[in-house]
Length: 177
Image 1 (cartoon, rainbow, N blue to C red):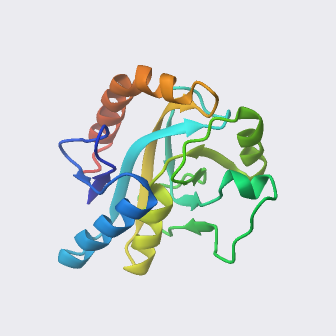
Image 2: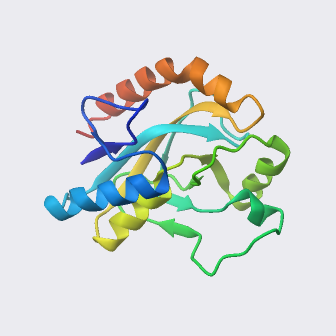
């Protein structure tokens, strides 16, 4: 089953699950309860912490859930902040950070690279958590639409349509459907 966030990021060949960690977790859980898929492939846009360029396509099976306050040592969590799906869908080990917030501080977010975290996408951590709960192999395919800097939103909007087109072509050409 191919899923995507929704709202601005919809694909005719993917089911929408909602934006952010909460909506995507609730709606994907509901989909899995109704009809458990053999695997889950999440597709969407991502912001680059600096390692990847605009329109690069990244496949991943690992996600983190680290808030910027944690990087500044302003918070802690008793929760596991890293998850990896053991699957045969993709083999890339780029870690995707997920948060309900889009990062705009380039100086702070560049520290993610030190931990092997290359991009951010709001939903992917929740997707992997739901997949783990249902014992479903899962992966993600992302296209970089912006960098995590002060112009993140403006750049995302500028690149969004072309990003969606390139990601659609990639997914359809790889025959994930």
